[in-house]
Image (cartoon, rainbow, N blue to C red):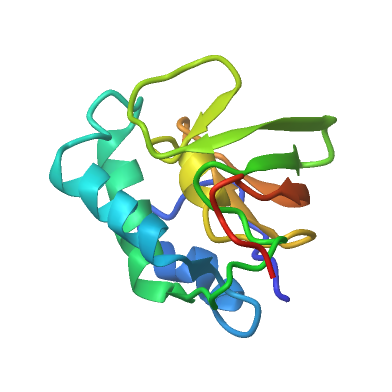
Length: 155
């Protein structure tokens, strides 16, 4: 997989150049529930409290456009809403939380209505992709482990 070496978001906020190597081959997989959840966030303005709503909306819309449908049953290594995910950003320490479609922050939750959550949804264990930051920097995120949501059947 190709990782693009960029430190700043392109001026045009063109996400295609960021994720062009990621979308091919490994890419992102979205369950029907996650796709509908992202569409609800976009249509109900669930991203309006994010530090950069326009940037987040662009990322979520782009992710809808480049992601393939996830197989059923949902693979246990797939990051979906409700799962507990452990990840690492640019070589920092491991962090974890439960991915949530809710627009309201809560302790231990990673909101899909954030650049971090929007990036994580649809990734798989050991997948590495660019992570946009609110200040325009671009880092790298890797999924270290995924514990499936209790309400999802795992393969």
